[in-house]
Image 1 (cartoon, rainbow, N blue to C red):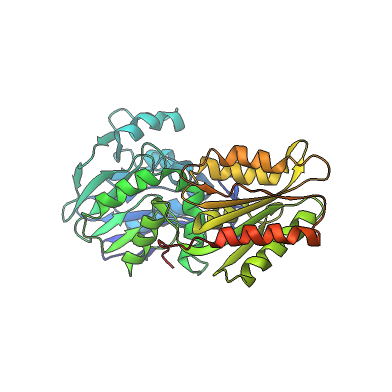
Image 2: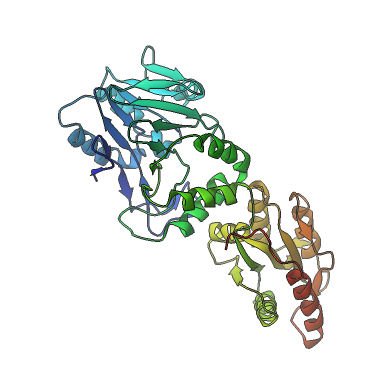
Length: 395
């Protein structure tokens, strides 16, 4: 697909509707886009390539968009294979073209393309580096650990375009029209969630730029209401609470713990909870569960005991939260066990790795099945979960 971003900038990216799992772990029912751009000035610059899965389609887009011209530069903002997978083929096609990338990226290039001769064909740039294309100058802003160490973003001072690498990206092909925030949130917390500090650093740098358009490497080009998108990124990267609500995540073997979780959700609603969302960790999308855990300020985990530990889907969920930097939330625990309940202890062992969380000390223990005598304990847990109101929520 070729479309005009401005009169001198063209979109030449491709949709991937055949992919089943992004990064071999994230379900993408609506596919994903690999975005690439072409700047046609006195000099010609390609802004990133695409995954090798779509090399042929992208090279065809590039050739048609060039209209007989030859590229002078390939700007590589991020070396992850979904964006850099066609570097070798486009370098072979245009032997006079130079690759412009951060110093770290230039050093890393041979790791991915060991059979390509980069001698004399790279330009390593630093923070504040520039590249004149004639009628415009590209300004390079380093963005290490957003979400790889070699990442940079690029600002075009003529059209006021920020080429934002993986920042402001989302799951979903461009051919599928959908609301931005949901899949952008799932993308952010699962891809960049650990790196809130580096994202904050980048946002501060971006605040000094006059940005009219944001061109990410996944998802739609953003041209209106940029304060909305930047504001959400600011909230997410500060680990602040986006929405008032309680997320109840359960891992149930035979359905008994599921019954407890659903009953607890009903109790929360009856007590006036603004929003209650429930997820079955054995069946629902893990990436969406991670997204919801970060979106809401309160989390209740309910799980069955298993092999003197916790049922594995819950372990996986809490592990994901731990490696993504989960923090600043209130957490309640419900365990189930028929003879030696162990889930509560096992969950707490992982939760103790979280920073700046408030854990309700009294664990609700269910023995095999929910009974009328268990309801008062669930009522007390609900009261404690709802005792604190969110004073930092966006919504």
